Image (cartoon, rainbow, N blue to C red; front, side, top):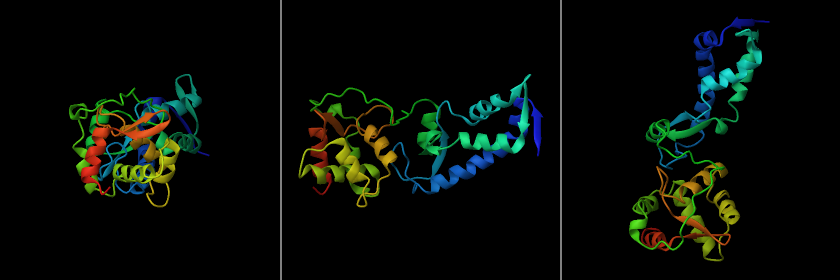
Length: 230
């Protein structure tokens, strides 16, 4: 049974690279499973694994090592500690964002919104009618041509539902994640939040909520009618 006796700094220096390689192996498999779709901007590109702010590799290692720390030295079973550090990275979605290089650069510079399920959307004004109120309106034409993108699928799903009824969040989520549209639930949630704001590197304002129902801004709907096959 191999045991370790070292400082935290020595662990980072000699065993940190081993942990990094093992975690990289896990994230590589996850990136490949995402079909190159960036979970921030929705574009198709080679993905990178970005540690969520506050959950960097060294912080996770030190969090685990604190359990084995005595007199400023780490004492314990080498393989047991390694296993706990790897498990502390799981599930990967709680530790990493799988995003394209431009989004990764912005995120690391704190210029990219970390859109998560827990984030509360900013209050919206459903009476916005001027094109100048929508800074990213030109993206609608681009999305209409990219049928593989999540934002394209979400707009099509909303249009399909709205022909029959007013659309609730649960109804939109259910149709987007079914066999026809095949959007991962977490990806749906991230994209939905990003399609409610123009802030930062979000997709841009499309949806807003009114009395428990999801609607599309009239200005945006005009663009959708022009470029999507409605």
